[in-house]
Each structure stands twice: as structure tokens, then as C-alpha cells.
Image 1: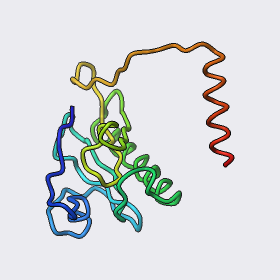
Image 2 (image 1 turned 90 degrees about the vertical axis):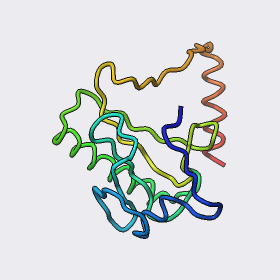
Image 3 (image 1 turned 45 degrees about the vertical axis):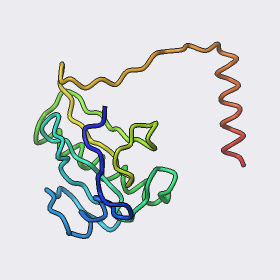
Image 4 (image 1 turned 30 degrees about the vertical axis):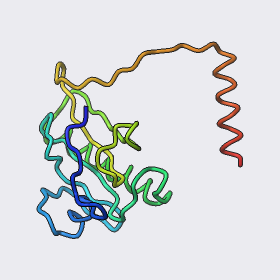
Length: 147
């Protein structure tokens, strides 16, 4: 279930307002392409959001350079979370579209420190398709990537 839903007026993005300094945020890191800040929905101490500075709604809307920059910032933040909070686990989560549970339509990645019994559930029903079905899926993906 979403912890937060962006209720910004149409045409206004809460993360864009944050990047512009129009709303307060506990900033962790900034560079030319990314910004990292504390999530207001702290399920565990040290939960950080890493976003693109430029507005882009989903993974499909960012450039390869932005994707690389977000991954690098997330790794840097993850190391800091481990050093500062020493969680026994860490989850990186990135959602796209309403059906993907995206709640703020500005590309971002969640860096979530994890602890046993922290109430976070990341599970889904396994379907275990046959090997031939998996090979067919892989073939379709290879063809799409070659196009």
C-alpha cells in the first residue's frame, strides 16, 4: 500500500518543488543530475529517496546518463546508510505507473534500510512457468532489445 500520494495540483510536481527549494527537505546529497533526501515516510531510520533533478515521470522517461547517476547516488547513499544505521539488510525499490505502485510521478528510487520483522512485505505469487515458456519470454525480450 502506498505510504504517500502526491496531492500536488495538476501540473505541479512535489519533487520538482523540492529540487527548486520551494519546499523544505532534509537533503542528503545533490549533484548535477540527482538529489537524495529523507523520505517523510520513515519505516526504518535512514530511508532515503534518490530522484532525478530533471522532471521525468518514470524509468522510461529518463536518459541513460540519469539512470547511471541515480544508481551511483543510490549506491553512495546505501554505503552511508550502512555506516550510519548498520541495518542487517537493505532494499532498493523503484516503481513505475499506478499499477507498479508509483505514487509520486517523478522518477525516484527508494533506499530502505531493512530489519527483521519491520513490517515491509515484498512478495508475490510464484507462477513457475515451464523452461520452454521462459525461453520464449527471453526470445521476445532479445528481439525487443535488438529493435
